[in-house]
Amino acid sequence: MAHSGEQAILSVLALIPAGNVVSYGQLADLAGLPGRARLAGTVLRTADTQALPWHRVVSSSGEISLPAGSEAAQEQRQRLLAEGVVFRGKRVNMKQHQWRPDLGALLMLLEH
DNA sequence: ACCCTGACACGAT
DNA sequence: AATCGTGCCAGGG
Image (cartoon, rainbow, N blue to C red; front, side):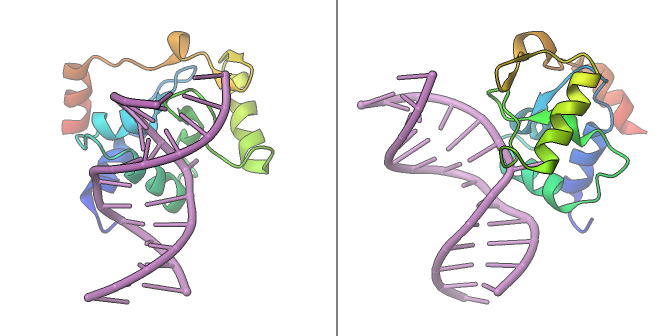
């Protein structure tokens, strides 16, 4: 983790509750890195997300941003379904599942 | 140092 | 609903 922004992103990722999702851009925003959605994508692609809820991150439209039909994409979909996340075709119903954390509380959690 | 690619997003067409 | 153009910038060659 050479870069601190990367750690911030991973820290927020760890806090997303089951049954909820965030977009890459939102994840970056919550990590204090507005406008850096691609960094969030890079982190998920690069870092070891093994013990983290990487599957709770989807594109802003609700689509799974992995090659359609790939093993990873299927895995992500299955994990979300298992948490009760509802899809409308290939998209997550964002209206219903997008995580909207209380910013004050989030800041507290990250201060530790 | 330069160039290309990409698990992104948004506004305009 | 689908494409396209543009901004973004870390990784990898």
